Length: 305
Ligand SMILES: Cc1cc2nc3c(=O)[nH]c(=O)nc-3n(C[C@H](O)[C@H](O)[C@H](O)COP(=O)(O)OP(=O)(O)OC[C@H]3O[C@@H](n4cnc5c(N)ncnc54)[C@H](O)[C@@H]3O)c2cc1C
Image 1 (tube, rainbow, N blue to C red):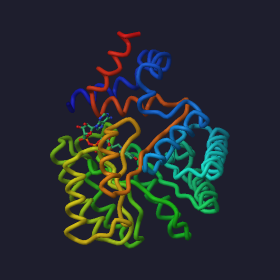
Image 2 (tube, rainbow, N blue to C red):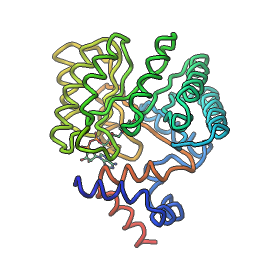
Image 3 (cartoon, rainbow, N blue to C red):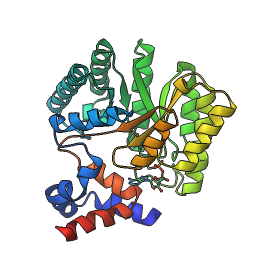
Image 4 (cartoon, protein in one colour):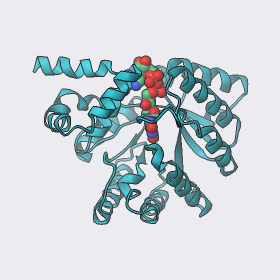
């Protein structure tokens, strides 16, 4: 599994794979994981999920922007998105990547851009989650999250990845802020010097992060499709009498849909991460790497034409 995962993530950089996938990938498989190539296409999907009792977040797909002018366009698109969500009365917040807002160009630029969006979201009563990307960006991302919180922004959250050795120390350092944290296993290809290569170690680290976060101040988003971890979180929260307003489950659009609805029926808050946009390629490749069986799903669609 680990080898297949690495192969798929490495293949994602191949120009030939990129050409093929950009041409045929949306029709063949991306539509399962992405709400549409435009906001207009995504809005009815978000509404339908809300009607099923699910909260949602959305993301304009894209990352690794290298040009300052391009980051201004991304900020403008996110401002439009926040206004549209407000106008449509959707129960949808925003999750974004700092490299989409210029982190690879200049940390101050990314901070200015995200601060503008967090401020705009606050005016509209909304919330912004900063996704976590490759390990090279973790320090800057956490610095930016801390600066936002220390300058009075409350409607912003961050993400910690259980596969990184450092995440437990990062969590301890963030706890005095009563942070809003999403906990994930981690979706990138990271070297064994800094990340657990084996699932059992990642799962054990996830449980440590989960229990620490749930018993501290703040809010915990348990973002996993792993039923063992989900049931562990439920049992732990019940045993420690942690109120339901202090945590929620989060899953990806197109993954374990029945489990999402079962948790809603059991009375838990469930948020479905539902991205959209024409830049869906890297997002799709990470979804394939998480579950190589998804490649078969794609190939089946290819054979069916
Ligand atoms: C809401 C949300 C936000 C995320 N944000 C980030 C982030 O900011 N940074 C980051 O690095 N990662 C992020 N991730 C991805 C995360 O790191 C994992 O790669 C992903 O969630 C798969 O791990 P898992 O916890 O579901 O457990 P796994 O052990 O990988 O999976 C458990 C079970 O879930 C099902 N499953 C998992 N993934 C898929 C899939 N793609 N397709 C179909 N079935 C699947 C399978 O049945 C599998 O057996 C996010 C995930 C979620 C749910």
